[in-house]
Amino acid sequence: MEALKLTSLNSKYRLIPAVQTAFELHPMALHPRRAFVALATANFEQTVAFYQTLLEQSPKPFMAERYAEFQLGESLGLAIFPPKPDQQEEFTLTSAGPLSLCLEVADLEGAIAHLDAQTCPHSEVFTASHGREVYAYDPQGNRLIIYQPNAK
Image (tube, rainbow, N blue to C red; front, top):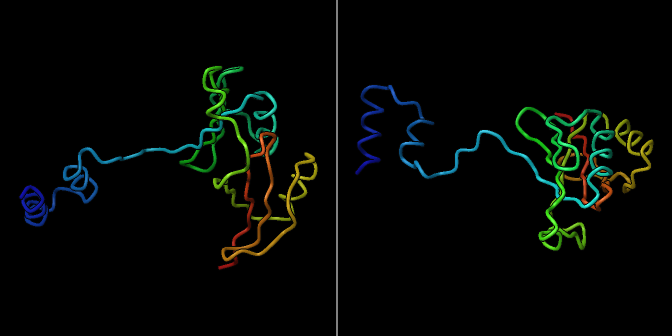
């Protein structure tokens, strides 16, 4: 009943934007304003240094031995933190797992040269449905997919 009332109100007066209407219809729904990937590591300094060099930026904010965040585009961040001692086991990586951090680049060869300069291990280039890519791994063994999309 409430949905019909809001829809009619929206149609009649055209005052309620679609996003606001969605929020009013689903006030408990998730409405994220920003997203970030959180990466737990026991080797905080080494991992922060790796991403600082890879991304060619300083983390902001940065709290020594506690938290570092890198901006990946306009609305995605990469947060790095050391897990608390009683949470170490929960965050222990036993394999690369199914999750990957995917980074789109304009020049895959330039990105590979950048990886090589860091002596960062990576796969050979291969072609996927969306473009050419390589798999690389950070010091913790987390998989990075660095790709150059197909020309449009």
